[in-house]
Image: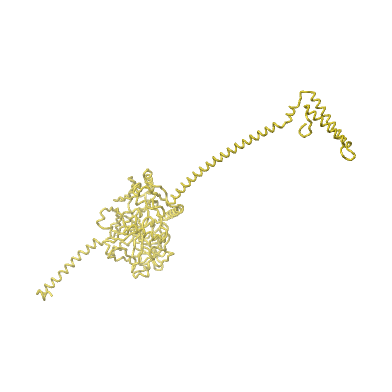
Length: 621
């Protein structure tokens, strides 16, 4: 066209027609990689959960082709990705948030033979077997498989990772009853982040970070976050081929620093484990922290609220009359000093709500154990960055907000808990990965994990968990019930006071009645005595008769004797002649009656003369 119309040579046309395309190619090749390096060098996935009602944080994976949703706990204390598959029945694996992964519906699914898994720990029927036991008593049994794993992010260029994981065919205890479908191991032996770095062009660094908030958070893959926001990160080196072991040098409580030595940790390096809910300290360290903490709380305005215990953990009930800010400010700041790092742990982070208890109840997230494990509550409100290439851990103070609102997050968690039974209590989900027995990683350096060295600690932990359960059974009353007990005690106290008052009144009345009755009885006795005295006055006793009888006159005495003899003689004569004095017709003789009449007349005359009467009645003579 140019040659024909512009009358230019063919060589010139070829030369100038290619020039713009060459220029555009050069510009595109230079600009696009820069855009990807600055804007798309990492991916971000949402975290859900909390340290209270769920006791863990989880994210979402898309597994298989086409993808199927699976929720997994983010766990920097273990190495294996595992979740239940369709080969496992509900009675063996439990019911979780999502359906078991349907292996038959994924075109990219692949069963692995024993030879496909480096350092396979146990081979059965050409399948590599995986088995792990957790210190709180739960366990997993499954087989190694492979499929496409895709982090659930908003990235447009997300190619996924062809990755080996474990299909669970049996789960027990907490693993079986948990809401999440499985666990994603992210410790220093895990290979999921390195594989993502190798296979996914959207991930430019062998780095990930967990930003854990009070309600959810986020999970960065490929970086710790935007580069411009990482200026205030404190870095410390980590050791260990499996765990992120750190060098803890000192603990500061309310400004008072306590230096620590390696012997304080029972020959176990402290490590960071997002899958463990609380912070567990070796006994020497725990004793130092506990003593200093409780000494601080002795202050009059310190550690406000009523103190109680739940599962051997100190708790405080926030008074209604004070704000949350005043309540938290009454507790000490805890600082953990690592090499080149001073990590601040604030009361809002180490005081957690107790599931099933009052909303105002806050419990200390520190417990004693054989090892020192810095769990999820230790990481709260910090962006913790794990640089796998440099073998460093970064701590950045940050408000970790989930990509959903607090209200949506709470309603989602409540819906999950309502579907899947009662929540896990703090302390129960202490996922200290004591290394699995008869298990290998398949994705790590091939070191065989074993629990033999920790058998005694496992037994102690089981005993502690059992004791916690027993104590929890004994202490099922919530704080509301305790308040109700207080009200009941007050009511009982007022009732007792009323009863006591009534009893006192009744006692007074009874005493008055007794007093009145005694007075009446005394008056009755007095009346009876007076009546007796009157009767005694009217009745003459033999002594009185003797007194009245004239004894000074000798003549009277002679006459008395003569009269008595005469009466006896006459009476004897009458008795002797009673038959002779009768008539022949049987009737009495009149003469005898006339004699008796005369005797009576003579006796009456003697009485008139003052002589004593002669009566024959008993008792008198």
